[in-house]
Amino acid sequence: MKPIDYLYFNIYNHFYQRSYTREFYARIQAMYLFSFSIGGWILFFEATYLRTIRHSWFSSKPGATIFAATVYLLSAIILNHIFIVNERDRLIYGKYEEKWDRNPKKKRDFMISVFVLIVPYLFLVTLAKFFPRHL
Image 1: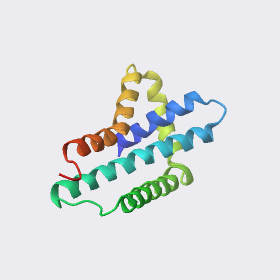
Image 2 (image 1 turned 90 degrees about the horizontal axis):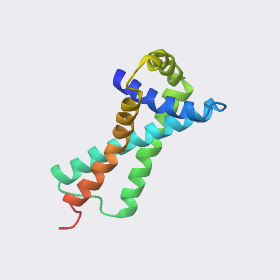
Image 3 (image 1 turned 180 degrees about the horizontal axis):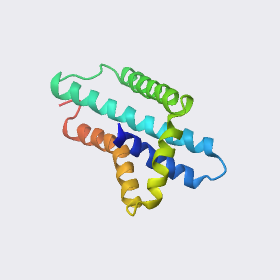
Image 4 (image 1 turned 135 degrees about the vertical axis):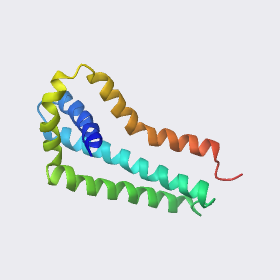
């Protein structure tokens, strides 16, 4: 769980540093961006499973849209409960804040975190390009 905690810390710290007066907004922004990424990973694994193993896809675009919206909403609700309601984000921030000040590779760690958040969507685009829906 530590790499995920550190990933979340990098995103939370970025938003926290950008908005000194509104800590709550930084918490919400980090949590929703993280849930957007988790939803992307779930959709990527689901798309990989459907296209490579089952060789099928959703029968309609509205069905796929409803499924994706459900995944995003459920991930946002679950992560809101974990990070905001249970204040896990503050524990993570307190745990890594002191180490962050001494870290000489801050920018690299942040860029890795951003890359991990973006990667599922890059994979989804390449999956759609190399395994088109209709052959």
